[in-house]
Image (cartoon, rainbow, N blue to C red):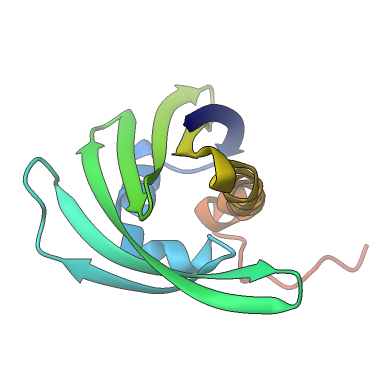
Length: 155
């Protein structure tokens, strides 16, 4: 039996849509954002994909830490929308649908993550995916604003 569930988040940043699309559609740049990623290799694009990657995450299960490598494809990278799909055996898929919209001086980035996995793996995979993507969300605004390397405020 397969289970599917989604979660979403919104990030606002002071940057151009083009800068956000460039960062979010180039998965080789995700190492600075995604807390689980330890390695990204670009692969020849799979049929129907704009770009394909082999991504290695470091997962934890209790005291154990282990690497997991999966394939990710960028399926759409438009001016206001990005779609990526990551696939890992056995039968686990993470679909990322990102929409970008200018609101005044800010760029609004709405992300919906949908995870599909076999029922026995679903709980662990969903918790890992949600924690990793919310960690990414907490860093994304600062990176896009260009403040990621600024020293902390001493106020």
